[in-house]
Length: 199
Image (cartoon, one colour):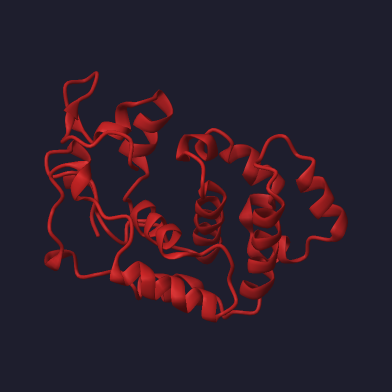
């Protein structure tokens, strides 16, 4: 999240939050209930990885508001189901106004599912979480300007995912995934959600 650069600000309830988390009602719920909370499970992580890839070059709110459309279009991001998509499914996706109709990102999502379907159960979860940094060794961000866009861990995760055949998994996308799925806690020091978020 990169819109405002200041510290935590009071929300409608008076509780301080990361500034981006107050910019729209959609963001308030996402910030308070999801962002930074640990996510596990291969299908759940495939969904987040895919959505972060679709977000590349766009604002996250664009993806968030289409998330249910994405879930419907991609069979709930069940890896086995998406891996079995046909050329007809691809054409359906390219015509689906409920998602981002980017050919390269759609193709990457389908290709990634076809790679991941051959992995052992839990392998994606284990791999991604193996790159979670030591929380105690990370400085607590006071303002959004303190929050990185890329880290050594996200660069290493990106490299490993690419090595294993996944697409649209650059270091910035990998770090956004780490933030969203709770591998790191980038809620600001004074944000009410920081204490509620455990890594």
